[in-house]
Amino acid sequence: MNPTRFRLRFSDHELAKVIAESKLPKGIQITGPSQPFIRASHGMDIVVYVNIQISSISLVATLAIFLAKQLVAYLKERKQKDTTINDKQIKPQRREVLRLIKGVLADEKARDAQRAKDNKQQVKNRVVKKPK
Image 1: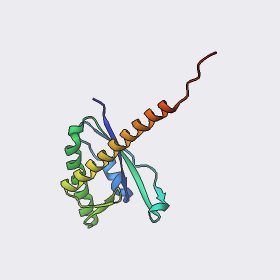
Image 2: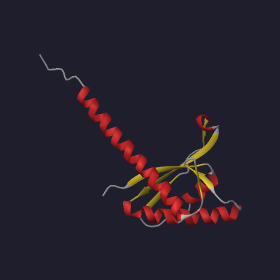
Image 3: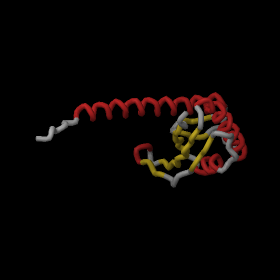
Image 4: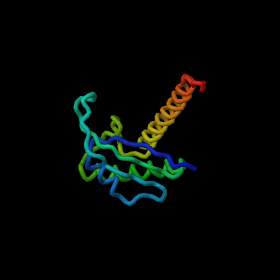
């Protein structure tokens, strides 16, 4: 089975770093955080990307539990109640993190389907010249 890959956008670069440097559950790989990006279209905020790869879609719940635990520890230390991931305020609860991940995966699936449709249309629209 092909691994599932996706990215999360963190507004808190320290949180992204803590998650990327944590001991990960088996079958989950995290790379990043990236260099900070300034997004002018979103009110000049700064985000960092973290790339996540899971070896099996069945590990989504495991990933959600892992991220929720990391959020609880980090936010408790910082005396915060929530953080912003993918432009959504997320509380450190497994249900909210799972909803976020499922939404990201659904978006990725929709993008992949659109890419496949676009590629098929491009192939169909190509003009094949016959040799004379």
